[in-house]
Length: 422
Image 1 (tube, helix red, strand yellow):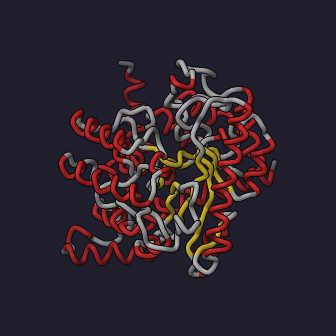
Image 2: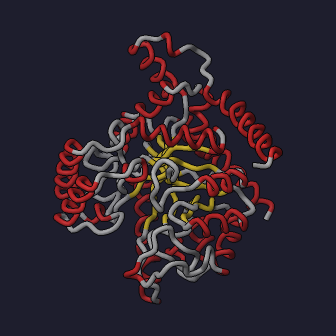
Image 3: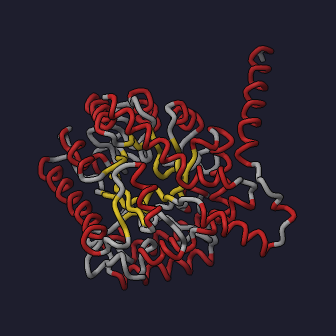
């Protein structure tokens, strides 16, 4: 080994340790607390920090009599559960799954996207305007929160909803979209996915990163003030987006590949590239992205999904309330027989990311109602348990505030600044 490289590596490691210490330093000694005192301390911190979950899926009939977000029901995120768990900000997702790229399917994707945009606006503006309000700026988030209302943020999952029409980026921004995931499962016209789909004709790389159109999309997102989201994109696409974007990029709901080696997770190189843009990686509480299942558990879940006709992500949205409740009851039985990831596993991923890229570049996401949820954080009402585990790990209140919302709001403001310049 080159001695110069060796000592350079030691120097970088020393800097990393120094950088991490302030993030982990408590102002009080939690090791001396009883369990009751620890919980009371964590509860007080949770009440003070602004909590923001960066990914909450919705059904196509969301904000209707069938799926009423103001009524406590089978959804993991509804307004009563948000209040119970002091989840201050929910990011409600306009998700449209990837299909074959034809003119008819482009039109359908746009129509399906509008259905979900309309639903989020209906919730906030017609059904529950006294309870929740849509934030269009980072300052709006803090203003609405101070008013006592819950906060709704709108985001897009899968850039397929713009088809090949660049003008739709600005239209969706005007409707409230504040981040857009460039791809989902399957390649699209913007770039390559982390999960190609053979049934859509995907065979390895299509663009070897972003397409020329994808580069235009990223620049247009920078211009209008939409955060560029690289969750679901391939490594090449992610690194390409980091090079092209003039503003910080985000991963809205991803976890660490070094701890769970699945295609959707991010490796160290990609995490460091995201950091270099000034961005934030939001660790996701989705079991299969935190710890790989045993073959027995995988078979049991596959059989259960087949029983309910579920294919791909978002399949739960097509079930009735009764079917969804039945599926979750049976899934809970599978989880009891084959215990999945815990809160400790989830925060292990947060710890890893903090140590690698720093406390200023890590956030939190649930992917509720889209597959997310782990023991200890199964719905919005259990949100305080995340803060409790962070306190156990020694994170200070300042660090916890950054993880829950401060980092994402910093990136959002920088994206707004870049848009203003452009």
